[in-house]
Image (tube, rainbow, N blue to C red; front, side, top):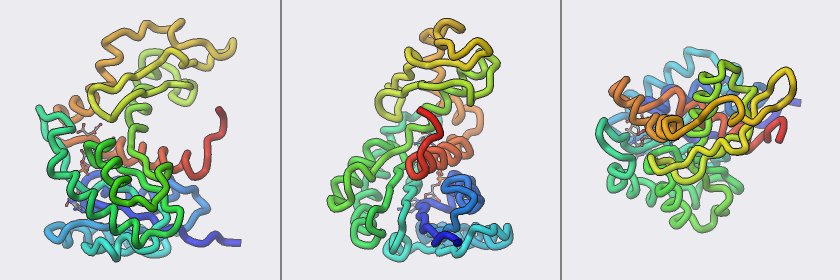
Length: 261
Ligand SMILES: NC(=O)C1=CN([C@@H]2O[C@H](COP(=O)(O)OP(=O)(O)OC[C@H]3O[C@@H](n4cnc5c(N)ncnc54)[C@H](O)[C@@H]3O)[C@@H](O)[C@H]2O)C=CC1
Ligand SMILES: O=C([O-])CC(=O)C(=O)O
C-alpha cells in the first residue's frame, strides 16, 4: 500500500541551499525512495518571484514522489501541518565574518517562526535548524516553541561530521563509507572539535583505528573547523550542495535510523 505523503517545510527555499535541497527531498534522498512528500516552501516577499520559479522547476522536473508544493511568503500557511521543518531561511555570512556575526539578523526570524511552528505544525514535528548561528537559532526556536518536545529540535552539525569523513577519506584514499565513529564536539562554529580518537577504517584485515593509519594533527582539526570559511573564499558564497546533502543525511538517519552502530 502506498504511504501517505509527509509534509516537509523548507524555509529560505529560494536561496542557494534551498535550491539544492528541495530536489533532493523530492527525489527521496531525505525520506526514502518509497516516501511521497508534499513540499512547503517559505521565503520573504522580495524573493516571492524567485520562489515561484523554484516551484515551476519542481513541476517541470516531474518527480514521481512529489505530491504537492506549497510556495508561500505566509509563515502560517507554510507551517501548517508540517511533519518535518528544515529551517534554512536567514542570512549567510560573507568572507571575513564569523557565523555569530549574523546573529542579530537571524535570531529574530527564529522567534516568529517558532511561534508559527508551535501553533500550526503537525504533532511530533521534527525540526532541523540550518541557518547560522545554527545552535543559537535552535535554542531560540526551542524557547519560543515550548510545546514542541526539546528532543525534536536539532541543528545541523552533520556537515562538520561529513567534512571530517571527507578529509580522512582523502588522506587515506579510502571510500567515505569505510570510515566510522568520527565525532564532532561543540557548536557549528570555528570552536568545534573534530574527534577521531574512536574512528576506524575498514581494511582487508578488519577495522583499524584511523590514528594507526594516518597522523591527524592540528592541521586536520583546523581544516575541518575552517572548511566553511574556505568554501566562502573559493566560491564567494557559502556552502550549499554539501549543506543540503548533510541536511538530508541528518533527517534520514533521524527518521529512518542507520544501518549499523
Ligand atoms: N549549519 C550549516 O551547516 C550551514 C548553515 N548555513 C547557513 O544557512 C543559511 C542559508 O544559507 P544560503 O541558502 O546560502 O543563503 P541564501 O541567502 O542563498 O538564502 C537564504 C534565503 O532565506 C531567505 N530568508 C531571509 N529571511 C527569511 C525569513 N524571515 N523567512 C524565510 N526566508 C527568509 C532569503 O530570502 C533567501 O532566499 C545561512 O544562515 C547560512 O549561513 C550555510 C551552510 C551550512
Ligand atoms: O561557513 C558558513 O558560513 C556556512 C556554514 O555554516 C558552513 O559552510 O559550514
